[in-house]
Length: 464
Image (cartoon, rainbow, N blue to C red; front, side, top):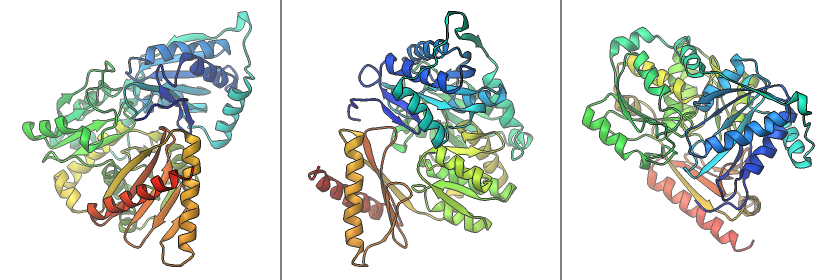
């Protein structure tokens, strides 16, 4: 990943490379803006396992105390746990210190509003206005903020998952699944093995020490999971699971040690949940066509949104969806909370496996097959990325005027859709890159589509 000169401010919050594009002054300023935004009331904070997270915690506390907030610190725990506790404690906001799936040298903060709900566009705009104008509501000497700690967060989250209407813990316990869990030394390192044991699984732990020294990439891509795949095969496990840094995502490895992309997580869970209850699905524009097939199979509607959990959540509320998520391995369970929850996915997929009576490989074989390709083009800045996407759109619109090109879909970036394949280019909200995702009947076709698109983008870069 290239060096970003400035922190990236997006729907996800603020992220940057520690000591390069992110320093404590930016974090404290944003914390003061957020304290002002919530009116100096109660804010829940939590952090992932990164070695820079304690530093950022102090910066966040300074900004929140300066604006008179009462802070409840739930400690080192997954992002979905922080948001769930904000809901349980009826807080006016929450701040999670994490860079999620970004490399270990990155960190950042993510905001949520009342009761752990992700910020709406209007709320994000208001927070940014306060930050940019530095119009902070600083508290006088006798109204400074206060701190309390709450150590019940992970236990509460586990309880909410185990009480889910779609889960029958006894049936999972009877099955006695053997599971290898790779938490990537991130925030899920304690809670996820604990959940599996509560479900009666025989657990093999990999990278489950939350010391912030990631022994594999924080993003659990198939290429990063060699050790997990080998361990699943060697231990003859039924399934392997892997988290990202803050455990809001989950990916699966088959009993044969084959790593699956995050697309399969949402596909498995959607197929499972829709056998329990009928309702619509929400997914992003870059999520696999498998979701279209699953929606058709169960006779429900699939709604597509921009990439970003906040957009998915807003649409889920609008259509009262029963499940939603992204192809990254992030799935949203409305019965628990409206945010991606990699822990709940462990329970849902374990239940799906037990109820189906199939192996993971058999579940994969029972679904329609498409192949996806994901690539990215590093860009010097977000501004140049925006200009490049605009240039690409103009080019594709001009080509489309001949009537021979595919349909253009502009929900997020530029998506070109054919009858049996698609390619989407969009500016990343979390890294200085343009992402190019494609899907086609075979990997060779998807890869070719990605490469042709990247070649076009490189050519257009010369015009900037």
